[in-house]
Image 1 (cartoon, rainbow, N blue to C red):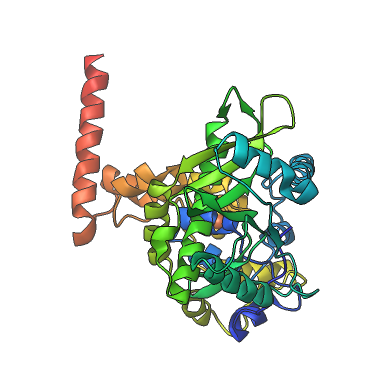
Image 2: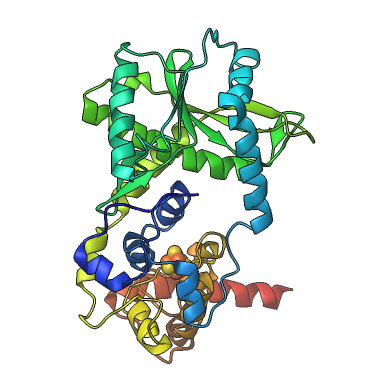
Length: 372
Ligand code: SF4
C-alpha cells in the first residue's frame, strides 16, 4: 500500500482537491501520466492528489479500471512470502540464481525510521544509507521499502520501490516483486513490460538521489531484478531485465509534462475537484481542463469513459486513435473534415494540406470502388 504523501501539494492544487486526503503519486500513476503527456486534465488531477476513480463515479462513470481485489491480495501474499524471515527467499534467489556471494544477510527496514513513518523522514534516511553504502562505509544486503523522490509535472513525487540491493555485479539494483507467474522462465509480456516501465521510474528516482548526494550514477544498474512466482508454485524466481529503452522513453516523456501548478492556475477561481461537491460543479471544472483522449486511455486512466464520451460529443479525431488525429492536423472535428470533403465548408490556410490529402484519399476510394 502506498503511504500518504506527507507534503501537501501547493495551495491551489490542495484547494481544488478539497478536504479529501491526497492520493499520492505512484510509479504506476507516473507511467500512466507519461503515456499521455499532452493531457492537462490528468496532470492536474494527479498533482492535486484527486481520487480519479471516485471523481469519475461522482460524474456518472463507474470506472472499469484498476487491479482486482483478488490480484491485490495475491500480490500482497507473494510480497509477504518473499520478505518472510528477513528476505530469506530473496537471499536464496540472489545466491542460487544470480551467483551473488552472500556472506551475511543485513536487511534494513525503511518502512519506518525509529517509529516514524513520514515519507520525508524515510526519504532522508534512505539517502543517508545509500550514500554510506555507495561510499563503501556500510554493508547492507537489502534496503527494504526505501523512499525516493522524483520531479513530476513540477511536483515532488515520493516513491517506494519494493527493495534495492547493491550486491549484483557490485551495482545498485531496483527490485520489483510481482505476483504474475513465470512459466518455464517466461512471464506474460504485457505484465513484464508494465513492471519494466515502473522500474524505470524507480531507477530515475534513484539516479536523482545519487545526483543529490554527489555520487556517480554509474553505480546504478540499467537492469532491474524482477521477482515473481516460478511456474505453478509460489517459489520466487528472479530475472534481470534491461531498462535502457524504458529509461530513455520515460526521461523524454517527463520533459513533455507541463507544470501542474501553471495548468491549475488557468482554471476559474470557482473550479473544484472536491469529490463531495455536486455533479454539475465537478463536470464544469473537469471540462475546464484540456483533455487529450485517445482509445489507449481506456487501458490506464480511471477517467477514460468520461473523456471518451466527451470526445464523442465533439467528434474529436483522436476518438478514432492517434493515427486519425495525426492524419488531420489542425482539424479538430471529424464533422469538419466531412464538411471539407463534401464542399460544405472551405478549409483555412492551416487546414488546406490536410483537406487536400483527404480529398485525394476519397478520390482513390471512389476509384477502387469503381474498379471493383
Ligand atoms: S482518460 Fe482523460 S484524463 Fe485520463 S489521460 Fe485520457 S484524456 Fe487524460
